Length: 363
Image (tube, rainbow, N blue to C red; front, side, top):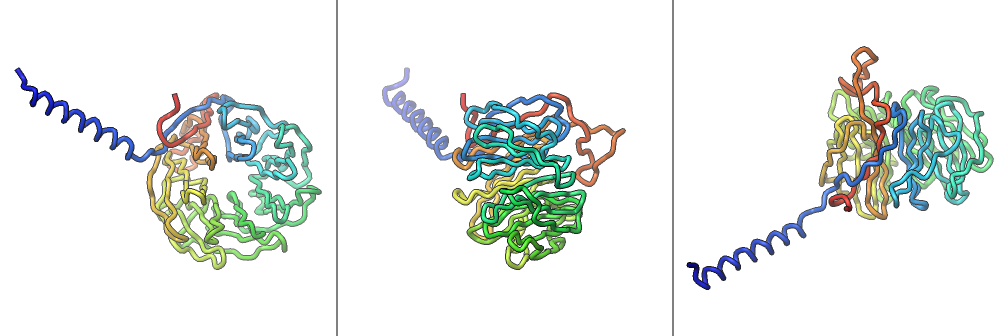
């Protein structure tokens, strides 16, 4: 029979173990985890960017053949489709004018109201094969990437008239970023270069060859506080890296290893976190910004193959991505430059939006 002292000792050990377990749980970092999956159906054969209107808490999913799907981030439900936006690759927001502008593959742009998604106009006079668009508030200019024609088209957002054409040396113009000072930066994936474009002067301010450390630049973000351009580089012969570039000189100040198939990048200045999606490898890397030229990897989340684009809700710190179930058909064209078995087909109806947040999914 156990003595009182033995029983008390055993209870003390259990109490200590329980308190230690609680302390460890409280101290343990809350890593990003998959919190929800929204099934969207559709053809699922092609998609491009996610764009996020923080003011209205709406996500815009450009799904090419399936059009432009709008999701309420607060409820996680589809609230509608933007009309006449088939072929949309991305959306630009002009919040003051209550306007959204799409970049459609046929060269048209669909203009709609951000407040209620109602259509305003569809303009077809700029050309063809639009691949993306961004809006710069300071100059009131919309910049459209006309990739196959090696051009960046500058359009006045009030008159919707073409006000400038920038000729480039490549056909793979990736998503640019504005610095808030009248310049945009356009990565050129096929020529391993970055163009700095002066929107006020409507001309090229600089062209930087980044091939020494950055091959296949495939996205862009801007660190306003430190005047740095941040570019994920897919790599080819060398490993894929994140390149930090001095926005005045074009010099690469540092690099960090990232996953294969990088396509999107987001810097959150408030939390000093940098996010990079690697769709081929199927992961999302999170870096801590510790200085203008210093980024330290803090975690990597295994997502799903093809989840190469994302947006961040800075209020909730949730990350949204999208993908579909891919198939590699050996009888079709092999996009081996991206990956030996890169998906060249998708299962119909398998398209999903993925939501990631810190900690487990809410029950």
